[in-house]
Length: 425
Image (cartoon, rainbow, N blue to C red; front, side):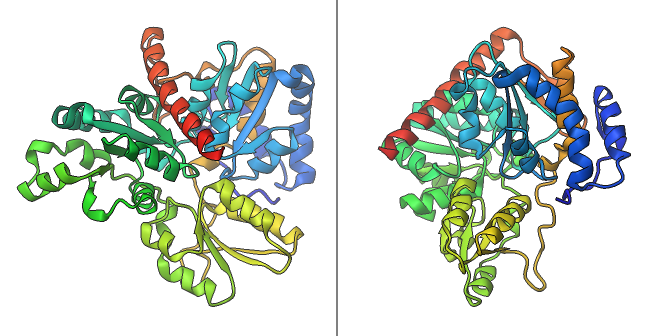
């Protein structure tokens, strides 16, 4: 380590987790020799008890060294596409505990087998992009656009959305996409000959349009968050309405705050120093166009693994990911730098703060309570759940409503899988 995360205050832990948090906060330091023995006391008995019936998961972006800790205890680390498939591919797992963000856990639950239960270590671990793209933001716009374009419109949703938003894609014959398959899904959607409502990341949408040859004049930029929710077709100026009607792709206006810090001139800085520049496609389009390559977290990690001794990479994505990649690259004689870490640049520090809400006490507490048969319902993830990332208040659908959301969201996810796998053959 040391663990790169500021300790959360005690009142940020739910009541059942506080005894574990008190023990953790009382530890003299955050070094492996101190943290791991404390975690072992709880996790080893649980792992022995459950065996293959328990599956621990984390996303590449997780902070506070949770990636290394989950891997240390036999868990799996993956990007959002592979995480969504983990329940399906590990049928022997009765309990799946995810240390990432809520929309990822909900995607796992959507594709899970009926006997599997999905939990998240911290329900308030969210995503700012998704926070500006809730169902109550999207639904009024969707209905407005549907009234104008009818069945001529399909929805493509980025993985960074709730199950309720993914269900809109399923209901229109659309699909989910990830940063790793956005080009393939966009090509598939364009081949349907219909107008595309791309939700929620405007930058990934613009990048996907660039990759697939959709020019700017055939794109329409909608607002995001409350601004987008309040926009109405009949309130558009005549010129804007004409552009909307001419658009092949309508882009919702949300974005990832982590990735918008990157600028094209940063690529010049590192390239002049002999670095190959690789970026995540949630970066603005001009950054992607200036880079030597762009792709998902899996793409970026694989590029590090494939690099030869003496190679130099500058990577533009979340800070924890780059820090972990740098550690692994150093063992291979490869130099990895974070693209924003330049003189007078905007250092990313510890990266995505909301993901970092999953820390050792949350993981330890949930696993130990699950072994005792006391896992809090607050941490159980079901399709259609909506959690307020600040208060932790959850809105849960009735079983009938859940099944309706599951049906359409599963269709959208399955279309993504089918199209992506077909493109690989």
